[in-house]
Image 1: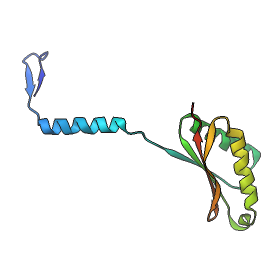
Image 2: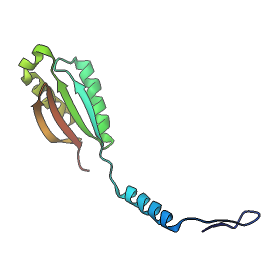
Image 3: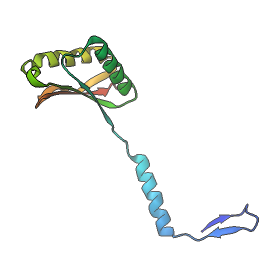
Length: 123
């Protein structure tokens, strides 16, 4: 029962106590959860230097906000013949970001994609 004593005629509202306890338990469980979000950046192996800088700034922003970041370098057509270009690009990205991140998953090929997961460095 909820009471509003400040109302001009005092107001009383009847409520289901079991439902109230359930809602209370649900909100407390939601507070204990930690939401893990994974952001993704897509690149091509022959990306221009300015475009790469824009993507690196975006990665830095994600990491500083505490998000894990997946870097996906996708190959199209004959680009797949030279996966070393993608690996070099992934290593360059890590070298640029290594003061603010650590590598969760080393760069590895999955189909036509080279994937690498970066997580924010522990403070």
